[in-house]
Length: 136
Image (cartoon, rainbow, N blue to C red; front, side, top):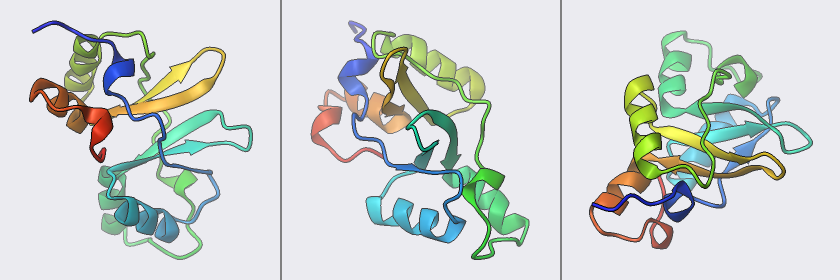
């Protein structure tokens, strides 16, 4: 199988929230958009963290999903990111190595430009066009 660049399989319109977004609306947004993660950006659009369905398991387990709990409390900040010109194989290896299902795609000049998920990679491997389908 010929390897392609991340730009080919990534979502170019990732769903974002700010660190002060409350967890309940964040959860509703993920359900409404049928996605498995939200990227957390500051007021300038700079990537600050990622909040995933796995993080929501921790929220519920801690029994603290209060209306005034913000995503900043639970988001991961030790993210691995990719560039649009990275190979899908490299990113898939990173995902496997770290146990991640979502990797933000950043550009030095533009900042956050997309998201690549295990679903995107699976669609590529299956011969489907990831850009033409909903991204998890």
